[in-house]
Length: 139
Picture 1: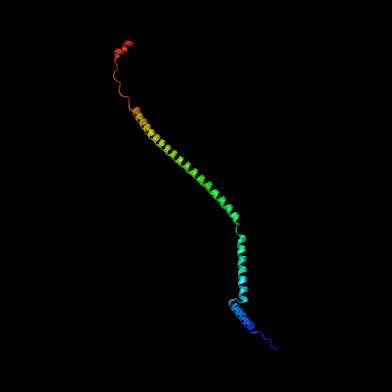
Picture 2: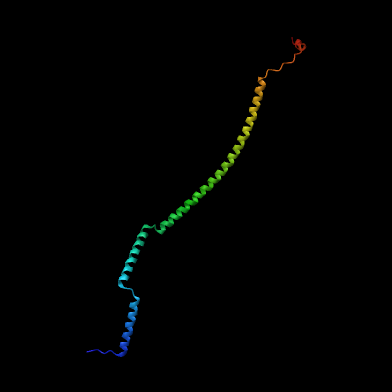
C-alpha cells in the first residue's frame, strides 16, 4: 500500500531535500572537523602553557615603574657626578697653574742660588788700602 502524498507536499519535500544536499555540499567531513578540533585544542593548550609561564601584566607594570624610577635616580646621580667632575677639573686647572708658577719661582730661586754660590766661590776682591791716618786717631 503506497501512501500518496499530495503534490504540494512532495514539492516541498523535494525542495527541502535539495536544500539539505546544498548544505551537505558546503559542510566538511566529520573526520576533518575532528582533526581541526584537535588541532585547535592542542594550540589552545600550548598558548595556555605559554601564558602560565609568562609574567602577569600587573607584575610587568610594577617592574617597569620600578625600573623607570631607578633610571631617573641613576640619571640624577650621573648629573651630580658630572657637575662634581666639572668642578674638580676647574680645581685641577687652578692647581696646575699654581704648580707652574711655583716651578717658575723655583727655577728663578735655583738660578739665584747658583749665582750666589759662584760669587762665594770667587776669591775676595782685593781690598783698597785703608787710610792709616784715620786709624791713627783711634788709637
